[in-house]
Length: 70
Image 1 (tube, rainbow, N blue to C red):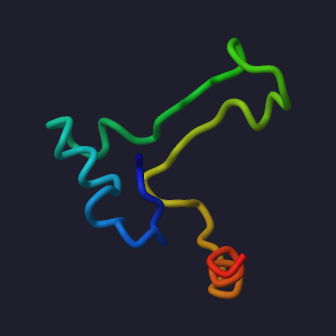
Image 2 (spheres, helix red, strand yellow; image 1 turned 30 degrees about the vertical axis):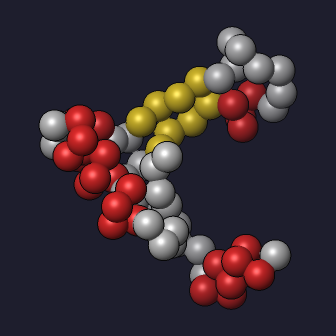
C-alpha cells in the first residue's frame, strides 16, 4: 500500500520507496491516474482521479488528530 505523507510508515512505503522498488524515477511514476468507473457503480468523481507524490493541500493538524482519534 502507498503510504500517505502523515502515515507512520511513510519512509518505508511512500512515493520514494515505490519508485525504488520499481526501479524508476519518482517523476516517471507520479501522478498516477486511476479509473475504477468501468468496474464499480457510484459517484464518477470518486471513482477516478490522480494520486500525486505530494498532496495539493496538506490537512491541518486538527484534522489529522481527529482522524487518528476517530
